[in-house]
Image 1 (cartoon, helix red, strand yellow):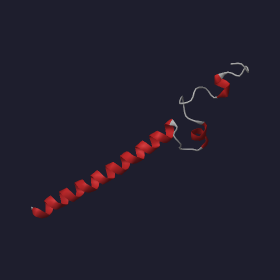
Image 2 (cartoon, helix red, strand yellow):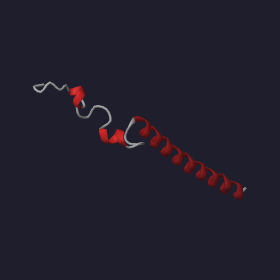
Image 3 (cartoon, helix red, strand yellow):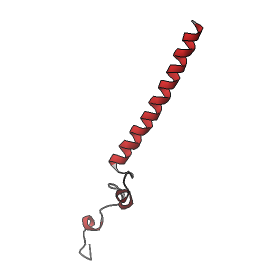
Image 4 (cartoon, one colour):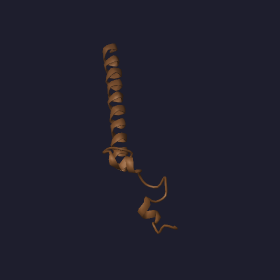
Length: 64
């Protein structure tokens, strides 16, 4: 570096770690926000599956 400022001080290499704008907003693309988003999606899928299963069981029960 000609100006004496290292890459670490300047922010490192692009594409490594969360970006500054991601760190600034809570629940951004950081590791924790991604896990929360994934958990939320899985919860939505689980609820949909449970409703479908309840419908199937109710349908079978009505036919018996």
